[in-house]
Image (cartoon, rainbow, N blue to C red; front, side, top):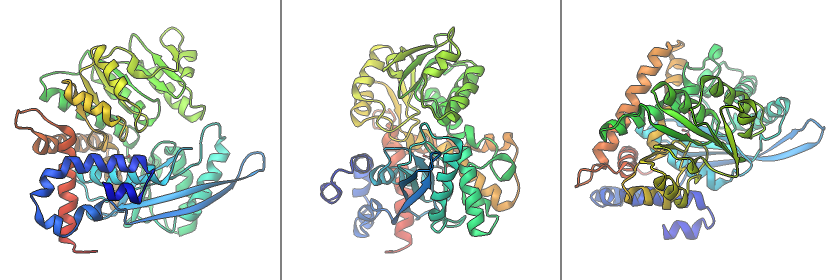
Length: 441
Ligand code: 2IT
């Protein structure tokens, strides 16, 4: 860590993600001198390569705009590079390195053969028109297409990149590559190679995992009050499945504040989340404006200020602080399943783990998204599409398996389960073993 801190000063998110994994795997690493000899950790923390490129496009006023695009190809030990694209004003190499690093272990947990990658741009979708989004996606792909391919590197969505953006990206890829290679991107539309349930998969998978964790603890999600953060694709899928399983989602949030929904979110409100996302306004207050009888907007507050049983961070890294964790506990919360990537700050995780609150990390909880991307790749390679029931069954099976891996590697001498250790050790062992077997490259 000291060496990395000196080499990459200021890469806060990247150093945070690496620190968490290294702390978790320290004991097993020291039991494997062959890992040490092959310098597995030193190699694993460095991305295989990073592409950086300028993206120039023209806005609706005819003004030329310049952004920076990236693709971090982190690790290909167990399969081709795989991971989403994030369009957000705060995107930096540090953010994409942390996400690519996490993705490597997450993808290993899915049981599918996928390496880790992440990419994106500091382009800010907020307030942009549909035409501006299209022109940006096309300009971005003019550079990216050279770096990707169905057996090489397969991007998908992440924050700021959903079905619409994947459509524009794919259209441009096809024009440049002159091949109808659907397997080059996942999260596509249903009529042109997309998998049924991919949009729902991250949220659905997170709830399947949460169900397993609660069962293991002798509890049931039925009747529980749930706080979700954000209102994007991941929050949307989580709200659908949580409601379906009989829980009550009483909070969603945005950068502007929280919407408290005392009687629980309705299907109509969940559908409206899609309208809010497509508007690019980035305001959760719009929900309370549309449903004034059901939702109450509280400016400047987070979902963690609402009394609940279960917290599901679904928005952005470090969105839940130690103070938030304390407030959740004081209000009776007993479980936090991290759905966003690194959604909880280290102090919050430490507080949960030392105060009897069940906690599971994003790389296990949210892996259903990329797992279903893996299922989309399989369908594309076979030129077929599966039914929703078939995809859901496979997703459920994968989430069960991820939970089992966490239990296998995370069960402590006192019988409790450390899901952070479990997920990190399971992912690490798979990637480290593959790297060792493939020699010094
Ligand atoms: O963080 C993630 O796992 C994603 N954004 C999904 C990546 C993917 O390739 O589906």
